[in-house]
Length: 371
Image (cartoon, rainbow, N blue to C red):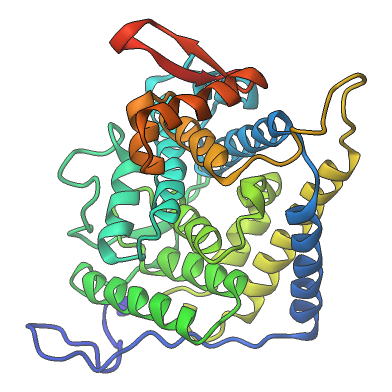
């Protein structure tokens, strides 16, 4: 179909210097500016909110559950919210293996992007391929998981008793590597130009969906990379939000918003409508987080004096356990670059305020979060 050609200036063959560059077109409407202001105000409130560490970890874990449930649910995963929570807790779930793999994979992808942010690593083409590999492990053949598609893809609507309707024709497979490379260049440039992180995340989300670089898992990859943009640019809101929830509540509106044209040429003309949808959703989710935090009350008789704020070293330890499931004294030595005795003291302090528990003895000794 015609969507496979006509990307003016895009090289079709070899390694000559490409003329085509990604240059998204959009307007910051009055509504968008108003919503971005509301997001900025909520960001201050959420960043300064006094939360017990247990409360914050509980909210963060709930956000991870909601993200994984919603992002996989959008694409047909049948697990309930309670089942996803059981998967997060590594409990046995009676459900199709593919559904379980999809949720496990998305959890791994979110933890991976958190690790990238902690290590301050830039977003590269390899990053996008790695995220795709994580979200499609065991659900795609190995030669397709973490690799660009090799054939043409179409987004179709199937209705009982009617011929299928082609909703979208993606760029040809040979165009995909250059389109992704150009997107990555734009991501790096957008940070230098100080494009608002929420705007940048929305644009990247839409562009990955438009390129459709993979045989499957494009939506999950797009949503995870958008989250990575937000996390890496200081808009993580203590990692308490799940924007995917907004999409999943009214999937039809999400599909209408993201499907901006019949082919790639049409989709890249103007992203204003998509950005209005994306930023409004982000604003609503962040205001929900703010309201949730504001409604929290410290438990009666709970000593909060020394617990409201954890020191940076303690949060690094808790973040590591949150990502990896456990931590050892040697891990703490590596993370904090401190002597073994100092590492043991940090762990004992967290143990004393009942945030972590010790399991095993001797060399097998390790620490886990208390849930």
